[in-house]
Image 1 (cartoon, one colour):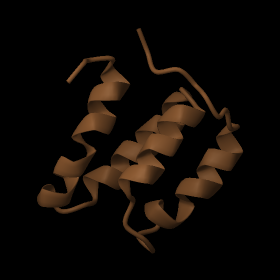
Image 2: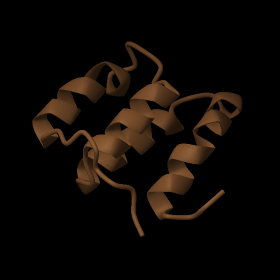
Image 3: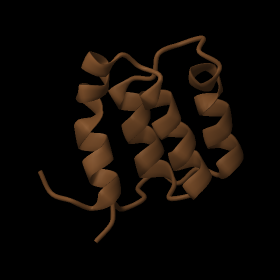
Image 4: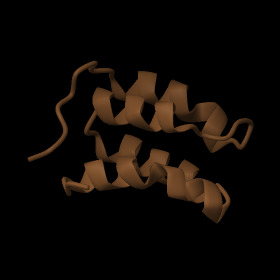
Length: 76
């Protein structure tokens, strides 16, 4: 069972939301990650979010464990 989309957003809106994080202008936050997950299941948007998380230092990536687990449908 996947995560329910509670606040749907189109791919373009997600792209605009992730743009500063993809460019490295800002560090992605847990709130942004959860917003993406609750807004879309579009694969490219999810991939872009994961790439933003990957750019973070390892210690900060650990904060996103719940986001990654929710994406895979695992319970924690």
